[in-house]
Length: 431
Ligand code: HAM
Image (cartoon, rainbow, N blue to C red; front, side, top):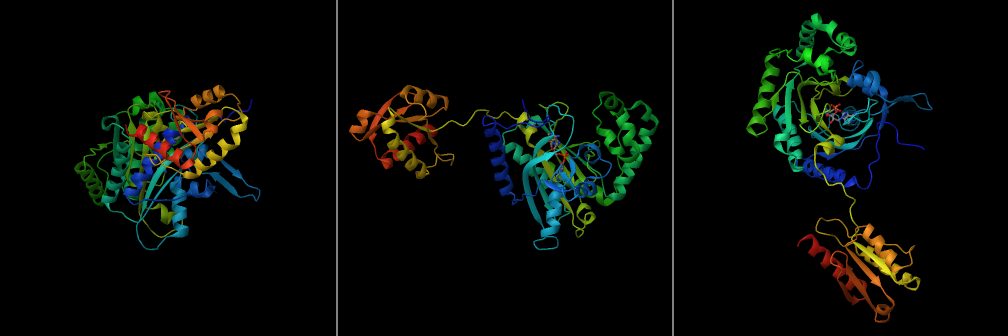
């Protein structure tokens, strides 16, 4: 039997309400903060990612899905979207006013990682990028927005942590790497093979090695007080704003991030309920990236949530959305009439209190009324409109409330039926 690829998952109708809920909460929050949606292609030139994420990062070294297309071009499935947004920004807006551009995106990303809980090969991110400002208040604003979003999702404040660090400017970052290498050098022999390989080219990654032995050895090492006065002042200011706004970040020098483009502020939000892969959100400043990939020198900051991890961390309803109204007949003779009514009801486009449209269906493949009512039950229908012989003679239909079993006879006029259905559904929604 053909199966979904390892590390990929079908999102079935029963799962979709959590996804839609998260997406709509995100859209609400992003709109409040004036972020505009951007959709970039899933495929890009692979050099976009090697140049931005970095040649020696895990993502570029072994996790990127790359292939040559028929024209011999080197293509990658995007492993993340910051580089794509930056590419789109340079291509479409760089240098234009307004100086600050705020984008948000959601969509699939691809990394050939070893699948485990909270780690997939196709996963989905929901991210935001603020381009055009180096002000610390913007760092605080975007981190606060991430927290605001979690609160909008009703995540409990005591279940997630905002961890904050600064890698400083290019000079500071080089110094941090140098200092860590100095501390790690004498203990390198005790670390795993991966860490040994990372030492020369990507030493910062050693700090978040997931090997438990390495974790124990590295537990207490940290490099502090390496920031230049400008970067230190920037960091202190971000911390102050966040504290003033009630976020209370945990300062964690071990947050160094796995992508090369970061400078200054970096942060992660971790969730208590998750295991080894506990980061539900991660981000930071990337002040040099736009210039490095060919744009004007423009500072920027952003983050991305992993949607699968948000779902693992939250308690979202996992039920298929029930049908509102089912139409049943007592015999084939009435099908034509029922289908005409169904068409008219659907075209009525009546909305429920949650703003979604009332849904209708039939199951005329089944002749018996009993069979049709069973199907209505399987679909979770709230009401069934029954066309019976006798009612047809009287130009009436029955409306059956599937919860109480009560039936009512009303005129077989789609306006009357529509008004009745709307009234009854509103009564259920707002008891
Ligand atoms: P990242 O840390 O690579 O950063 O990914 C961000 C989030 O995506 C992670 O915290 C996690 O929730 C989720 N994630 C990453 N890999 C996987 C996976 N294999 N399976 C499931 N979820 C995953 C970035 O991608 C940066 N572009 C974030 C950013 C935006 N920085 C600045 N702007």
